[in-house]
Image (tube, rainbow, N blue to C red):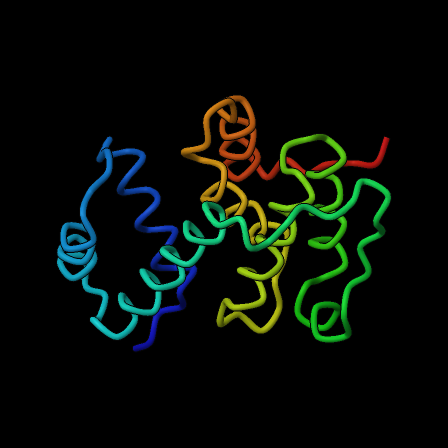
Length: 157
């Protein structure tokens, strides 16, 4: 059975956070995922996705869009990202949970998931993974974790 990248990432995130594993090596993460029953091919895909997320956040290649720029979704993005998930991304930006640059990284990483349609919960998980270790994001991390566990959704003000 093939697991989705997101299934593996969610398991790994839970393992890292709730087992309090700080900065495990790639080998340690692979061992944990293998012991949990995931196959090597799926693990490799998930770890590659996660390492790319980290590289994109650390990279200066992707510059932040101008504050006056308007984000327009491509037809492919509109087909894959549900309307509520697109709205949630904009709300995260408006609430300063993420900035415009991180929004673009999240969109890129969401589009690379092997899911047919991306919903709000998937956006929450990916955003949580992206901001979890960023300094100054502790309150946003807690809020996203609570929104995942309780089903909280944002409403337009």
